[in-house]
Length: 218
Image (tube, rainbow, N blue to C red):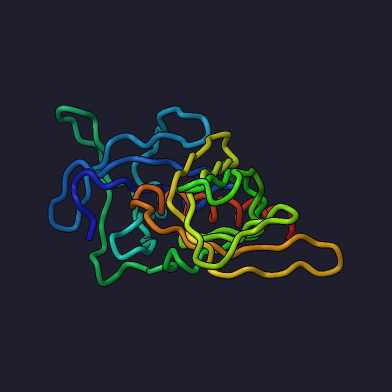
């Protein structure tokens, strides 16, 4: 399931402070993966992990799911680039976390909505929730939008480490939810043409948001 060039994410199994590192699979041999030196996502610095360090590894698969497995830093290898050797338990020992389309979080993310053919005036708003499959957006007062309307959606996703993802995607309104008690209408929308990288970025944002909410006690 993991191939050479695939990106993986590493977390220390036993650590007081949660840190996540990213790296790539450089070589594969039997039940071993050879990875380049991990980079701390928050600091951008190369991590020095001792042999014997127990880790959790996660990666995004082509079936729109996230997989995890326990591993260990076994050794170092010098080749064209310095590498770490970790054990890989095999595809049948992977833990499947969740399909992307079900990873949805409540979040007010900035969105710009632009018509395809001047059907309405462009506007900026925020989401009420978001997933890799779509979102719910707050509609402006006195809007004339209808279900099945397609438009171009521009989204800014801020991560807790200060990084930003910028998403541009064709989107479609599923339905209109009328506001009550003075609240504005909402529209659940579907992202129509996200590529794999964009799906991974939104999923990463959702998990990042879930983690931050847990830390705040939500």
